[in-house]
Length: 167
Ligand SMILES: Nc1ncnc2c1ncn2[C@@H]1O[C@H](COP(=O)(O)OP(=O)(O)O)[C@@H](O)[C@H]1O
Ligand SMILES: [Mg+2]
Image (tube, rainbow, N blue to C red; front, side, top):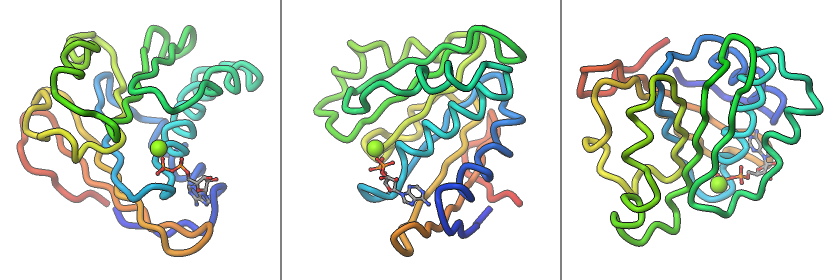
């Protein structure tokens, strides 16, 4: 998939479509320069998943209002179709060593039955280390203008090593 969005609203609409059909186990990689909109995409995605689970909008705002400077954040979906889904958000920009990942539970999270793991700056990792039984959606965001972005997306299905382009 390769699409141009003219503003945040158009991006939110695009992500809402993806959020409707997330696999039970999913890793979402977000690549793009600082200010491209990676963190915005995570928040927008989480909101869309929460909305499609019937969580009221005031609670959605609470769910994603925490500061984003941490290495790791966790959001919980308590009800609806995605009840029990834990959403993890990693920003690896300041990652200094793989030991930091190990000690913060990065590798343990993948054994849960339901998961959506967002990773900003996946370039800091060796992608081949990610579990190969989990679907991976890789988004690349390019800044075209103040509010215009080019969004490309590749999906890697479980048990397949290469990213294949879809749509
Ligand atoms: N179409 C768009 N998509 C995403 N962010 C946008 C868009 N247009 C403007 N922005 C702004 O760009 C900034 C992106 O910031 P952020 O999501 O923190 O980027 P990153 O995590 O990639 O560094 C936000 O201030 C957001 O409001
Ligand atoms: Mg960010």
